[in-house]
Image 1 (cartoon, rainbow, N blue to C red):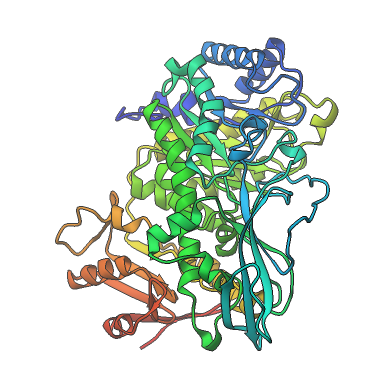
Image 2 (cartoon, helix red, strand yellow; image 1 turned 120 degrees about the horizontal axis):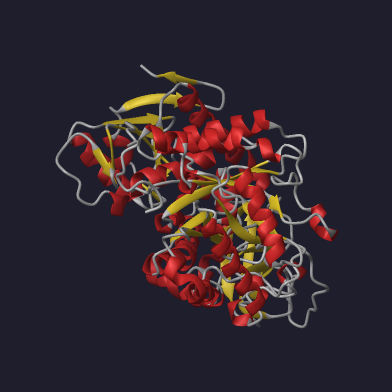
Length: 609
């Protein structure tokens, strides 16, 4: 355990908290690292009241990543940290996002991220130009592609009237458009040392990432895992971001996440082909119908990603006695997490210390609440936040305290300030400011901030969450509208606004709550007793709020029905669900007609009599 393990809180412990309660900033190794540079930075961190640091390779580092020199310096840093009663926190990548192993993994193209290209133009013999520089995991076009299918599509008033997957040499029907699908492997990206990002939908690719990174750390420092080395931080794992058409009649290239065996695993999961029905991912069906295929695709991609990356890495960490911490990519809104993750909460199941990222002094209550809910339900001992990043040189102690306070109120106990620079030489000085270290004139006064939060953490980590309200996370209803923006943008924007307003309505009204991920609920509800409370992991709730969801899983409906029969309270905000697993169903509407109802719109929430 990272924290007290049942140790009683004493006045002495509260006045002088240990390293486990103190911040461990991202420590930028951004120059030619030497023992002297390590000594200098550790002295500064100790003077600031920090409890350690995350060894974080950044632009400017002049030591070969994961080479012998680098690993020896990591071991030296651990040794000097231990002498100062500080913890060493590991980081699993050269810069970010996690997965490519600084390009050491993805130099083998079978481990590279790939995507499905849906295009109105045949790509046979077509050459793609130079690489782009992107510091995210979004795949880059290349000439390494495989033909998946040819389609004829007929639209009526911008809606999908007819479509068919046809042979390559088949004649096109009159009035139909021609579209093609390809599996394409990412091209080279200078950000990944002229390699590419990882195929995070593939377990074998993730296992190779572990061999290159985690196994190397274990060989050198494995005896200290779970002791003076509590955790390893994973940063912004993601898949190739989903795109959609701007206009239904637009003939443009669109890419979505895909991998070599996705058609096979999709058929195994749902009993029918994805590729046969591919156009339903890109166009809206007529008559306000929703696409079951679209819903299943978004669910399957989310599960493939969580299973391949978080579950694989989390299992290895558990087996080797070290906690997995860090945060996902693009967590805050329904739109961003749909595009980059499918859903954020699903991956938290494999994090021992789930975490968030809070840049630019934003107030992403949604991001914090999603992670805190997982911490509560899985009974985790703490929650990480990468905070203070990109706040610039004039961000003063008032800002540090305010940002730290509201995050502590929402469960953050492992503070990871962004960023402590080792050096300001060369390109390193262009990194995101400010440097929370000796380059800032106030660094010796920083114990005023750090001692305060360390004391807060000694108390927070001894508390037990008591939350009465659970809220069904609405992201799965959002998936239904991932179509052309001209048709779906208004409802998607309204859903995201309602999502944020609901969170603010509850929290600013001092009503604490936890989100429920529908994908996690069946497992977390195992062992439900015959009582009025709903069991979700180690948490129990007396009320469940369903916030304007168009579809719910049949497993969710069954659990809620039994909960209501036992005397639990279910409240619907907005419309009742019309679909179960994206299948039309009026059973759900009839069975919930007499439940408590709220009107829920962008600007108002009021009781319905």
